[in-house]
Image 1 (cartoon, rainbow, N blue to C red):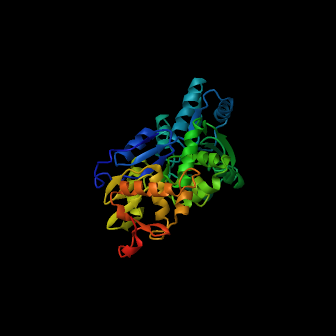
Image 2: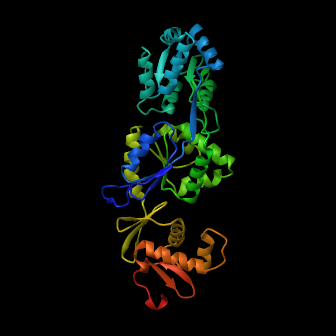
Image 3: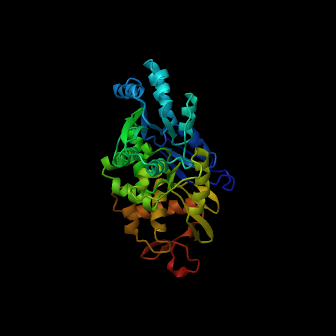
Length: 391
């Protein structure tokens, strides 16, 4: 699914006009998309995970019974939805009151404000919550206190993958001598609409989007898992390291990506509104503009801005423009351009037709020069020899 605002809107009032942004969120995806489209962006949405509550899960019920019978010394709540779901599941088993009573005997740590809110909604009170909302800060505090022999219950995020951060959290605590009791309050699995996930992966690899966003660590882990299944992990990671900026809601979400040396940025306040504002500030600032035959030109993932006006290009025209802009001012041969265009045509006339259409779409045909017997180039150098150009 993708949406784009009216291209007639002024770029000054729509700072993300022309940008295409990938959204991997499942929960609150529509709300996040609205924040971006109101600023002029096009959104490519592909939810990567589906959360499965474990109301009927025997493993969770067994862990709950263990905690009721013998409350842990310390309980770490990592998500609000998970903690609430746990209490609701216990209520379904007739054990909610006993669970809350048991946890009232434990020291409670909330990873962030949502987990803190869920703890308080249950009539409990947390001992501490880190300002950073980071599992790493929680871990550092526990290790500094010393955990040898301490019995710690840890609410898990979801499924375990090689990119899921919490299993490492538990492993570090165990290595430090703690007795860790994992609490699997819900699981996530890959969203069943894998075709949309695949399109997102391919869009990142091709550079068809200007940024990709993540609002949870499991969402990041899921798309990395799918890219690996497709045999595209290396290309996907490379694109995020080099050409497609990665914007995350917070440091925990960024964890699986940063573990692969993928640069990420995230706001100081880990909220959707703050992330939308960060994107609005960052993407225009990072945009690379060219001066082509007197026109300020910015090439986006799926569009081009010419003198602040968004110009819609066909897929073929955009491919051609990106090929010419890969080395601004360099002459690109007809054969090179033909190889970049879709299809297996060997007719160089197809390039001439494509160039003519691109010139028309840009609004100034002189933005693309024809260099006799050599090919085409962008007119980034305003001082060129007109004798080299032909109609």
